[in-house]
Image 1 (cartoon, helix red, strand yellow):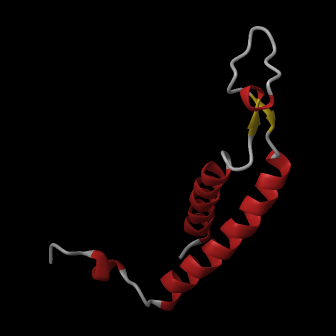
Image 2: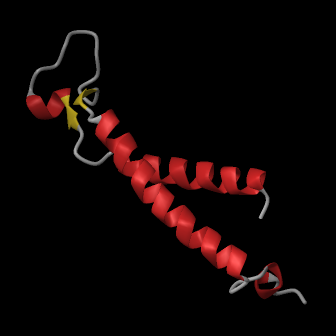
Image 3: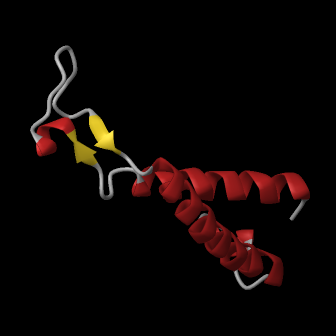
Length: 85
């Protein structure tokens, strides 16, 4: 795996993990009952983005290491995924 492939794989894993983590523990204005005039009730008040980014980085690094290890070891090859022959 080339360095570019490794970076692209990490970026894809990081963003997928981040999008999964975004709705976790979010507190909206509607939940707290303090809706500012001119905003939606679903607008976040406490989003914890810094904590989510740190946790996402840790989880994505672990997932990337496992997936890269599988790819580099040859345990699963492209030919294993080719079902058309």
